[in-house]
Amino acid sequence: MFAHERQERIARQVAEHGRAAVADLAVALAVSEDTIRRDLRALASRGVVHKTHGGALAPDTARLGWREREGVEADAKAAIGALAAGLVAPGQSVVLDAGSTVLALARHLRARPLTVLTSSLDVAAVFDADPDVELSLTGGDWDARSRYLTGSTALHALGSRRADWAFLGTCALHRTAGATSVTDRDAAVKRAMLAAADRGVVLADRTKHARILPHLIAPLDTLYAVVTDEPATASDLDDLAGLRVLRADTAA
Image (cartoon, rainbow, N blue to C red; front, side):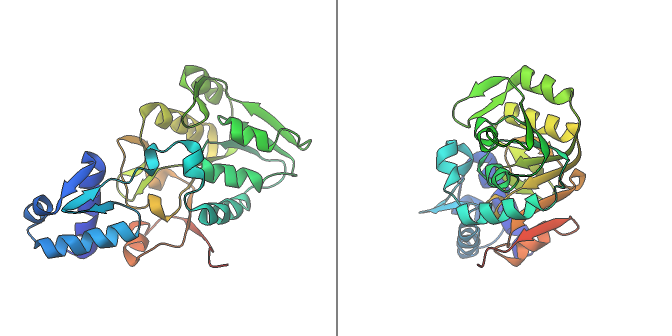
């Protein structure tokens, strides 16, 4: 088994169970504990796990509040948002998800004629004084932790609209498991956004790579593109092989 395959299995184990012990992983993968420790260090350097004494924990960013998440990888999110904005032509219609990376995109879409539908009050606030934007909110049940609208009202609003683009954030991106979410309610809204649009794009910085959460949003090969920053390792490149991937330059 190659190192990247072994690390993918470790990442899946930690994501699915929240934690894993070095000794248990060594037995399951038939390698030494030193090999597992090296794998955990590599995964921790990419933000896939949090290394602990004797094992690893799943990172907590998927369960942080929205304000806390906004400060994580802020430069990468700004660069991803700027690159994704270049896909949208004046006069087009877009569906915008909630989340800090999509908010970064919204800031780059100001001052151009667009039709915008969003489930996020923070995204809507970006356009609230913009005369060029025809703005609508989905309505729905307010999720105070993530600051977005969800539930049947939001799903109905999305089901009655068509758009050129849907831009989604995600807390987990995996080549075979797809884009996944921590809650079914969030995943359902994201799926409805994709169904409402001609082209779906997921925005995800490198800390979301090679992660799996319980609820499927979409297989990656059903998306128009993934917009991300530079992968941390060669295995991240392998993980996205065969997909349309736009990589933002975060070196500046």
